[in-house]
Image 1 (cartoon, one colour):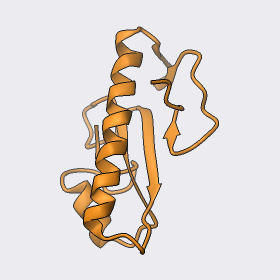
Image 2 (cartoon, one colour):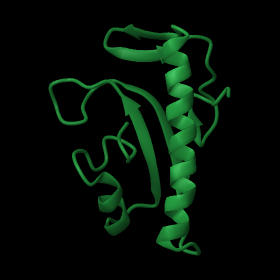
Image 3 (cartoon, helix red, strand yellow):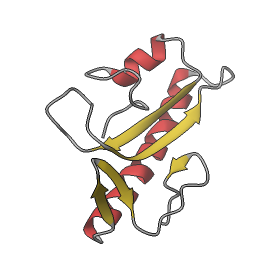
Length: 108
């Protein structure tokens, strides 16, 4: 799990870099680890707008809830054997890829 929407802000301190960077969205990415730094195939993503009306503490709370849901759902897909790799790309069998803030859509 990486605390940004890759490929933005790879490496350590991704969420902190999002805080001080010029970004309109924050989010998280579940990906496989490879030999690079946050360069492995992406399995799932959570995104949310960086709303100026909310404090960073409020955004962090909303972010933490979204990341928890993303992580739990991704683990369920892996445990259920629904994750396949084709030509270096990951896909969840019979998942919907149609809406945000989660791609693929949550099922839990």
